[in-house]
Length: 381
Ligand SMILES: Cc1cc2nc3c(=O)[nH]c(=O)nc-3n(C[C@H](O)[C@H](O)[C@H](O)COP(=O)(O)OP(=O)(O)OC[C@H]3O[C@@H](n4cnc5c(N)ncnc54)[C@H](O)[C@@H]3O)c2cc1C
Image (cartoon, rainbow, N blue to C red; front, side, top):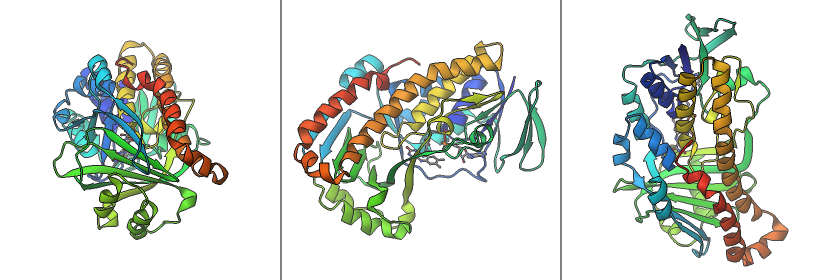
């Protein structure tokens, strides 16, 4: 079998690594001329950590921060929920925060013998009973047995096989950035206020930590990145706890932050004919959890297993979807539930009432939310 992987991100390179282990021939194409070094922090659930080890990429885990738990606070720094991951770690293994750039670099090393064609995309695809005839952007033509779209949230492959599929906009904008390590945190810490969500993520490095700010789109009109810093300082000025110190240390250069509308992708059809999708191309998630990479790694492991096990691609694709869909769906639901709480504060009539009973209301909400937690920590896929 000869596989074409479109996209050399986390999911594409992980799949290439797993296919190599199973002696399945593959080529990766990547649209960038050279690898981009931007990136912040990614959370790896225990089962994704397992995949890193299985890929022989465990070196990256030595530089990762082990997440001790999840703390959710309100704007006044009152704890709404505190969940230790100790019991889950004993049962399933650690949850780790890794830098995207380091994970990507390690996956490139795993794939040092794989053919990766940079600055290349697909110009045309023609599927026959024999395979897929691919015309590349440089005009070259080649036939493959299957094509995997691992080309991220704005997937070209997705639009080729499902032209009507659109991204779902959550209605919020996020800013991701590195700041100096103004406090030592070992848990993921979220602050939730009125139209305000802050995420602080542990990082192994001594000098930096990663911060996420999220704001409903209708509460800002920022288009020029230069306006971001004054806006964030003003919008989050009432928040207590670590937030004021973080605001004092925002990067001076707007280019040093990643500013984006929060789009998600939820597809029911994961494949068509000989083309299958993986990672963000089929299920992009909100960055609130940063679990996109974990899900892409797990997809890669399952798809490679099914391709090695099944005697035809249709059975392999269907098994892959059946095994992955329920888990991805639950994780996406958890992420939308956090959004729901965040969005409730936007409703003017409810705002005062909700804000008054923030703690009892939200803690009930999060207890329910953490019922899904076994999905997050489960150790098989
Ligand atoms: C540069 C970068 C930085 C990121 N930083 C963060 C972060 O800090 N925190 C976080 O939570 N998430 C981040 N993400 C998203 C996160 O990496 C993904 O959600 C997750 O890893 C899922 O991986 P994926 O392989 O599905 O998609 P991605 O990792 O997005 O990889 C997709 C790859 O496909 C390539 N590509 C796109 N279109 C084409 C095409 N038509 N032909 C060929 N190649 C194509 C892209 O250049 C990219 O290399 C980042 C993504 C990128 C690309």
